Length: 102
Image (cartoon, rainbow, N blue to C red; front, side, top):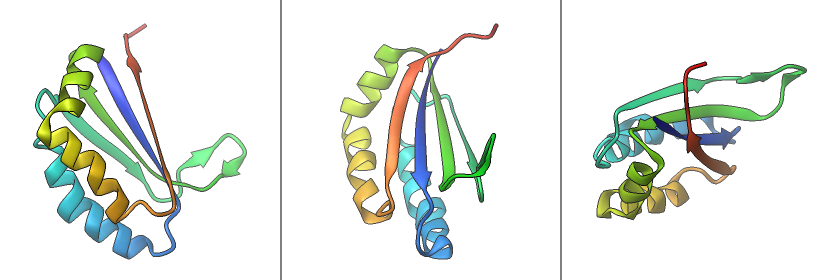
């Protein structure tokens, strides 16, 4: 398995972010080929020392890193990546890697 993590910083207008994210971005992202699961943690995402500015973490699961690469290269993946400019003005970090249960 492999996972893609999208870590969104605290938006100025959380309600507007949520409206766009859940009504436009998520449906678009769910069209990406090879996506196995999609989960989010949102609100005041906490670190060990308390709040640190992260508003939402999306975790998208794929079969492999090659599957993530193919998904991101697809027209749907390109459209999803381009859509970030429409709502993630506070910043988003995208990370990905192989995962295993231990």
